[in-house]
Length: 427
Image (cartoon, rainbow, N blue to C red):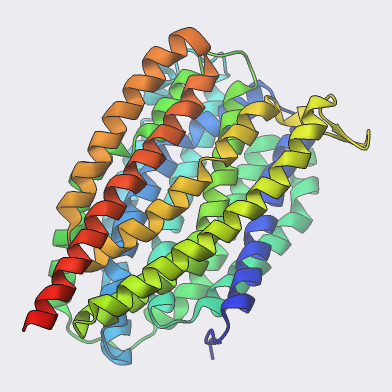
């Protein structure tokens, strides 16, 4: 039976351990192969498949989780099961077409990157297969988290990552970066089968009313967010015009940021999103505000930890990129870019909490409008700034987007909850 979470501390340590192992897995590829054209091809090839995967996963999870949290066990399981079955075929068609056409869109999008076309095409096709598994896995994770089975999810993902870590060195030595990409795909498939088994084998119940609402909300999110979430693609396209290794550094920095944000999502945003659905169902907006501010205070402690970690690493970089003359940080390319990207985690994590409130409230249109404004302003900064300060403009644009997005979402979410609380008191 899946283990139910009863301790925020144990969840935090499990999440941190799982994410740290995942980072070790990804960084081992760069360490064993070295930052250069091959790793640039790796990060460029995953851009489009992973963008679409993250777009679909984010829209589905943010709408599915609060909906499942308000249902009883049997109906909630049937809802997740129906979602999995209905989306599988469209995913296979979408990413199958993307994989087939990779040989044409890769050279067009990344014109500034001098990479082997066959290598980049093969990698892109593998990442398309991984993207299908990632979306289906995200749906299962959302279903378990809605029932507060956080620990079960973390343990499964941690164990699969440990197995992959044990295999990474012999696979890269024998099959190179292509073998590493297949290893990541296998890890996603195993996690998918274990986590989704509970829902796949559940008793079927008619939930057409719920799935219709889910797809309607999801399509609303995707229709707009498909534009403003292309920021990561813009970053990598601009990075492809820099010297070899810069695109790898940007990719590593974004992976660090994504990994850190996944921890904040699991420890702070997901519990808030689950509780938000229940508080709003009982018209208890004031309690939800208290929880929201509590999570923001917890986030401020995390900011202090990031500061304490990045300062000594910066010192080692200034010494020449070596830690105790043993670990050469220069293997990761432009370490200064990686450290700067880490600081974008702070406003991004705060934005997760604010957007979670907005999803729970149901004000998806405001999320899209505010994010679009932030995206346009930050993209203008990136493109024009790139002409003068190069790759630093990319990082500055990322930070600008996250700051603006959090500020706008925070103001709107708090104002909406205050208004609903005052109305309930008036009634």
